[in-house]
Image (cartoon, rainbow, N blue to C red; front, side):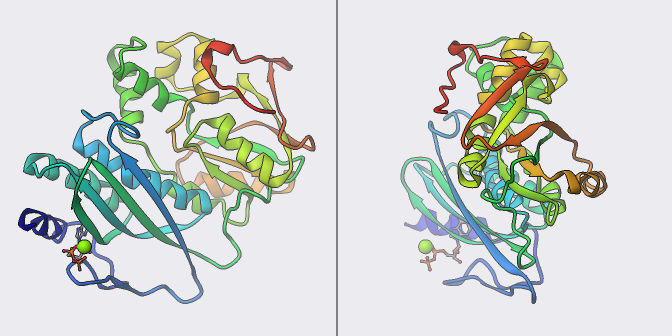
Length: 321
Ligand code: ADP
Ligand code: MG
């Protein structure tokens, strides 16, 4: 397929170039150098058109998001991103779409000094799989299963924005002006918390990124770490755009249940709280303490001003605890 050969070359030029890439795009394999005294973290995520992004989403956003979700997984592990590869399935070759796609891809890779080192291109339904690789000093990876009862629970940034942005695009909620723009941008162009992730090494006991929603992703920490949690919904970090757009109750529901924010949830022992502040202050990322871990394995107790809080059923998240 000649046109698809061209695509391989499309990704050949431009993008960030790293010294540790010995052979990049263009050969049968890429060859890279792992730094001494570092271990490799590897993650893969697939995005399918119509499933993980709207079919009419801007190509730039599709590529941006595909890279961001992978860098977010590295961040949640405390890894410093280095290389990505891209397997791309396209129904047809549209050069304008591809140019936009490549611009979104390279915007993020340049920002994080990540190099695209290879991939594959096939004709098929619109979909892409990215594999990202990064480095971690031995023993410093941030796992899901090392949280301890008594740890404080934190989240970076604000929660629920991406879900609200998606609902705006689908016409399910109304928003205007800056709030509308902000929420849609949070859906289309998520920010992987790379610097925050590496700054949590040796400080956080457990960490995960928010892809499926706070309750769903926190529950992964709770089940693997055999803990429970008390979460104060009045302490959830909500953006101004969110507060201007929906009621408080809806905002809390988005923050608890909506996915695709790619913020980090992490837990920190009482002893490490001071170090956390120092370490995060160099990253420009705000983290908010939203609760504390308990010994009740798998159970999440929601509180609002210290009273029991029930997530209204129409907001959909049925959690199994
Ligand atoms: P092969 O037949 O050896 O798999 P391809 O024609 O598929 O080679 O790819 C040629 C080169 O272009 C390879 O180095 C491959 O890694 C790269 N490549 C192909 N598609 C992509 C893509 N979507 N993104 C990045 N690199 C790609
Ligand atoms: Mg190939």
